[in-house]
Length: 243
Ligand SMILES: Nc1ncnc2c1ncn2[C@@H]1O[C@H](COP(=O)(O)OP(=O)(O)OP(=O)(O)O)[C@@H](O)[C@H]1O
Image 1 (tube, rainbow, N blue to C red):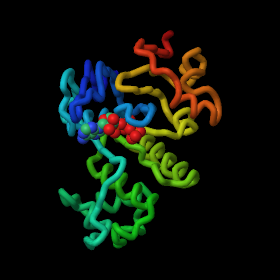
Image 2 (tube, helix red, strand yellow):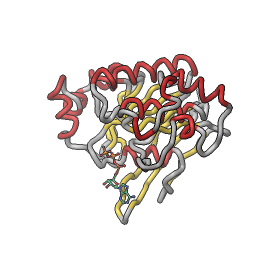
Image 3 (tube, rainbow, N blue to C red):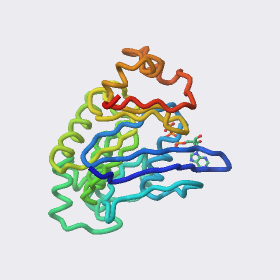
């Protein structure tokens, strides 16, 4: 199946510093890909390059013709003194047909919030509204940048169940940045570990059975810590199903 989106030889420089270099990846229709990596490793920058919000210094991001992308940013600052209902927020910058807005709110479990003020939403409610907004694009790829940041465990589990249901229903590919390794292992078709470049990638189970996996993830909580401590080699390790 041909890729919806391909990144080749991508380098990005921000504030005089090279944040990404030699990044290559493909996103296929319907797959769930999780990007993991230490703080500052360029995960958000990579997503922003995918939507065309960051100019590559080198390389390119190719999108299938007419590709529709939905993007849920890591955070969105809204002036708390500005009165704005959820319904109004979803009509910016383009007013979608009311039935579509209602369907997006329904799909994300945010239907009862339509008349609420944005400033009054809890963290989890806010994320659902951002997700609803992303769905209005009828995306073929949904990009989620640490969408469950600040949510408690049941809240983030519920959020990811919603994402899986949306994938099942719409067939969209999902690319998410996550620090929650239990989610990564359970819910992803493919994991990409980033540290300025792609350190390693593959199916979670294949990555798990590879020697590098122990250095990357280990097991349990220690594994999560190992992820942030491991030496990011500049060799590229691939653990695809074919190997
Ligand atoms: N606009 C900018 N100008 C200069 N430097 C930037 C800019 N945006 C990001 N950076 C730097 O680029 C690097 C990568 O940032 P990015 O947000 O992509 O990392 P990340 O992997 O998403 O981090 P985190 O896990 O902390 O969210 C960081 O060192 C960051 O300080």
